[in-house]
Image (tube, rainbow, N blue to C red):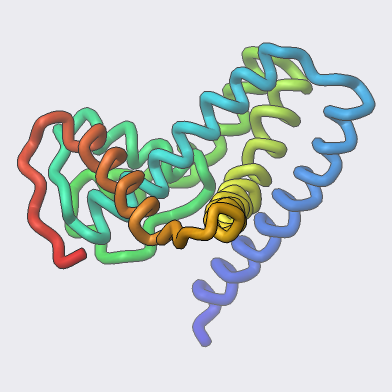
Length: 189
């Protein structure tokens, strides 16, 4: 393996460890020092931005290519994906993705630096590190909780609530919002 690639792997592994250690410390800090409402509001806004970047941008716009939103919305989705500290790993054929790949580290760091500049330590910890952990682990867990809840409600009512149908309805709603009136390319699902 070449030296440049080894250096990239070392930097990525170090960043992964530091983000998670920072997140664990930030959870403790936010509980002990009670982060304010402004910090949690900032965390919620950045969490929605990062979710939109990864779920709508990466999944619907660039991977499935099921919609073609306006360029300004693609830019916001690309920034949201980078703020989630989650690079797009597919082919960067879109010029927006090439731009995101070029500026990924500064954009990703802005998800930590800007809350710190605006709100101080509680912004860094709540809107930076805790938001990172919530995006990385909280959103997939929330999806699992919804799936299990639908299954249990269906069992109690004696009916089968097909989760894929619910997920497909949610995905269609998100897709409709994402395209803002643009034509949707038909998919097989």
